[in-house]
Image (cartoon, rainbow, N blue to C red):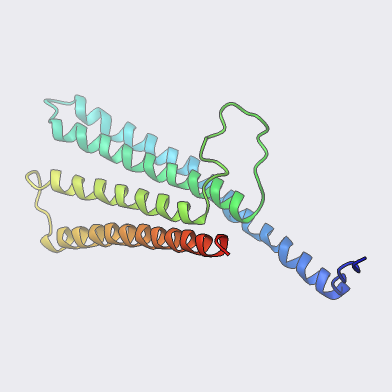
Length: 188
């Protein structure tokens, strides 16, 4: 008969319980991000209220409508990004969100690990950057644009794209290494 495994000393159990409980210090950060959502909604609505009437004054240019839509898409993507970070970050680092069997629970919720979160985050940032760059390009004929600003926007966008490619490559290499390790250990 084997002896039961020795229990950790009380100080170690107390320390580990405290460390484990410290994850709750992250919860206010996620609540703060949730508070940011109505602020973003306010900016979204203000943009619609401020810009939409301009489309009905005189002869609207198609570019003006496209620019408004791009601004709204930009804000929507940023709000989606906030939700992804809140849901997946909270579930990854604090606690599982118990929604029961709610039919509206997003399929990806609970399945987005830190690696997938990084990729979703960089993909959203690249999309937001692309929209910003597209808005600048659409304004080229309408108003003078500082060449340095345009160059920096392109450089920053390409930096985000390359960062996304490198993050995806690192994740792919990590997955391949795990598969090789599993084959090596599985074969013995």
